[in-house]
Image 1 (cartoon, rainbow, N blue to C red):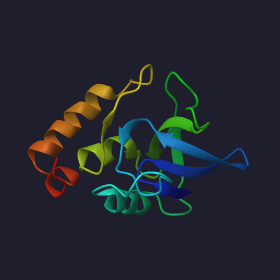
Image 2: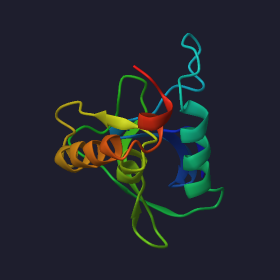
Image 3: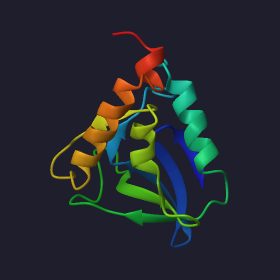
Image 4: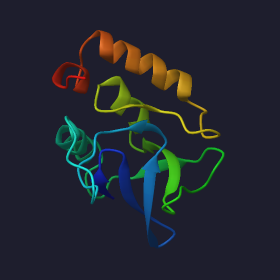
Amino acid sequence: MSVADGDTVEVRMNGRSEKIRLIGVDTPETVHPTKPVGCYGPEASAFTKQLLPPGTKVHVVRDAEARDYYNRLLAYVYRSSDNYFVNLELVRLGYGVPLNIEPNSAHHPEFVDAAFAARQAQRGLWGACHG
């Protein structure tokens, strides 16, 4: 298990490394080759790394589409030890915002509700970033 940035992780599956793009959440950029580091991006990446340190076992759940344009696996990720829903918690705690790309929208209403609550409470990027 390793973390590329707040919304992209790498896991070992079936004996090989697999990049996973977390469905339903968009965290600010930290490693994009042509975009600047976004407000609260380093914090989002650090939080994902804290949630999923090397060696963490996860349960991966797919939605309608298996892969994105960059051939990353699209998935909802749950920490195996406690069933912690990583995608949702990133939104709930203000490390990211909902990103709905049909047809991968099984949890979209939950993400919208979580973002609303985070924004109201000024958690994470909602309190730290302007505009």
